[in-house]
Length: 427
Image (tube, rainbow, N blue to C red; front, side, top):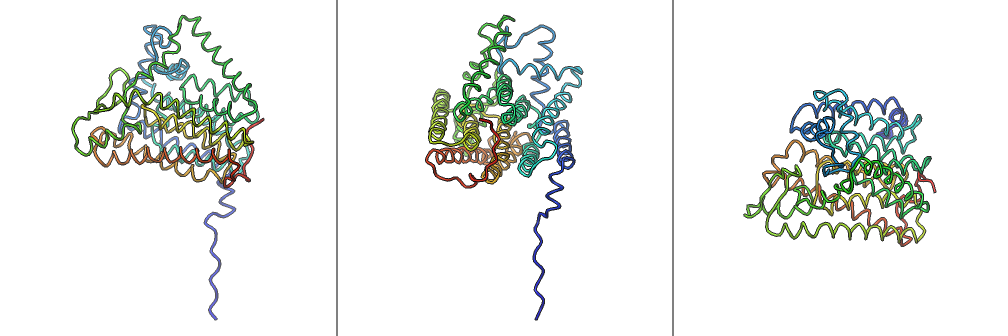
């Protein structure tokens, strides 16, 4: 009789798993990915550092010279603490501003990465770390070259601190909110999902009061809140999912749709029949959708869902709502996905493999759009409009996925993997 073939060896052996979990291997991956991203930014292809070199540097030089005090004397599109990294990148002078910015973001990522993996990373932490590196690599240069790149590691660090330092975790999330608004989703989701909601709300209120008080003493008045009106006054940006109708109208050759550059907001927007109505509708619709997600979360919490299981999908659902149900859209918004997905992978590994995989596809499609083929999108070529539409559709798929997950938690319907979650939040 012929000999039976030897059993196939597993693709990933225990030895290779051990190697991938070693801190030296993880840090080597971190360095390699960031070297690639820095090189892509400095290559100038598509000018991914445009905002850093053209906008942030101008703001920094104007502030240092005393010509302008953004958020104090002059309206500012971002919350006041966004000036901290913008000014910090000027420490070695204007000629090195872009390189200093990339170094600053890399340093912040390194701090969050170090806390994530610790000295002896477990399987879930190592998997989350490798996912984050893959996500950054697929997202491309914009993963380092925007103010959102500063808030992403701050949010990751704040979420990881919630287990051992819940108060300081909430404070760090509050600080991140005053750099770019989106981390407030974590504060709101915690207030719904956690029994320690008053501690979270107190940390946010106290941190915000200190920031606002200092700005008031500097003479800001209500200008400290100008970032709110700066956002609500925006038009319909081309990367927002709601803009897809008009982009396809232009791509298919129907007249009446124009893509233009708004010199005041410094973004590409679209105008055509019905865009004014869409602009007026989107902010109230966003508020209603956020309220609906929070209602689902409150329902699940009342049904007895633990904060460990409820908080990650609720947070991702809120973040995706802010991205998808919005008249504003930019490639750097995809950096927001990293924090909630890393939290999910660390606390609930098996149940988060699918969402994490979809997010990787979203990141890859985003890099195709920006910076490499952005001109094709501005020209509304069908291929690039399709790529952007697919990216936006996957965002909505993820949003519905998380909404269904939160709904199931409120109906006591088991969610696959719920019995294997690893507690990360301290109650």
